[in-house]
Length: 499
Image (cartoon, rainbow, N blue to C red; front, side):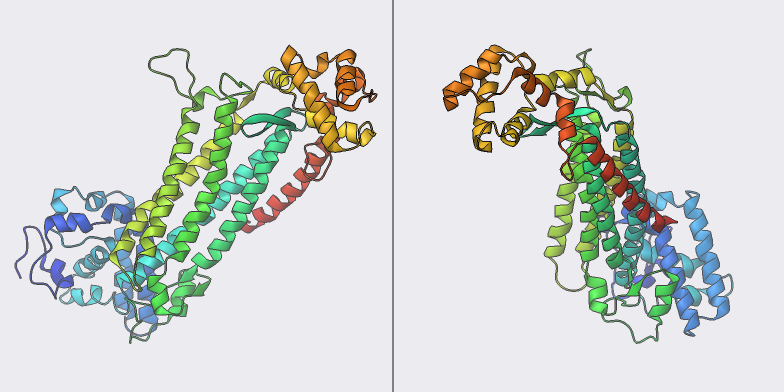
């Protein structure tokens, strides 16, 4: 067969069924070399394990294995030193004539070309694919890659959760407006808010642990689809590659990507609460709210308006989360449309998975920095708490508990009328008058209910209100401290996983 300029005859050992070399445009269209760069070293590790197993089973001699491992070590060093970077570029003209579109045959070809200097060295490199296929190789690579990324994200989560707990220690008594329907609703504390996310991210950690158990299983040895007649020891490669178990059914091993969907979904379920937190901070840092201020390092300017301090980092976190949701949908839609067995469409899963993973890790790192540099505007918070009547429900509960009204619904109606009157006059609970209370009382109930101005001022004072909310999970400082101790213990238990 004729070969292109600069292309060795060995390049075509992989195209025996075909008369012609691959069209350059088709090669570029098929290529996933740029995406494969991320799993190149993992692929070498998997190949090393496979060859070690072949030697154990008698298909390679000790010398042949040594030659192969030496060549793979050199290849790894060349990769780490950047000597192979040009190979991974789909735009590189010097590689345009090569028939390869992914890293697996390229690595095998390298072994064919370099494993020895004596006549017949091709035979050594040509043995490495015995009992193996791209199909089981790539899914093995993906499982190893994903398990390593899960472990890294778990570590990032532990660090982030600890930061939230540490920050909460300074804000047990920092009263804060809680929101429903994007409107000020009730008084909480900033520590109470932070602990709500501690719980969320502890769940995220546990979810990742569960997914890890299903990811860390070995498909290697399933070959293209139906296993092999070669006497492989799949349990041996399972041990070498540090998998927890084996995927026995060869069809399942090469066809299934549910582990990938679970992994991507678990990563995305870390970004969603980060996105929610980002939206809170965007709203709270607005001029209209102004209860927090973002550090300059995490904001940007307007090129036209000199006064602007834009929450651009947080806005982009929201946008990237939307993008990640789209990527997850791409993973699901691709897999849902495939038949049993390996199909080339699965190649397209890699870039979407890479992006979801990268975005999640970057987001958790940057949110940690944003929270640790956040400034809280206590004066503005006091103003919002006062003018938004956030303690109205606490006044209604007091009326019910004290027996001044018969039911909570009557108390709710009474306080609602007080708020309506104060709001009409532009006043707060602190400015309520005895005459106004009495007038509303007679209007609604035909009698004086015995509620004094002093009582209203006392039971609607924000910190007094917070201290009264001692129900399990509430914002009372003592209750938040109780939860803090529990969550810190739970986090410490998870830290033990990493030694």
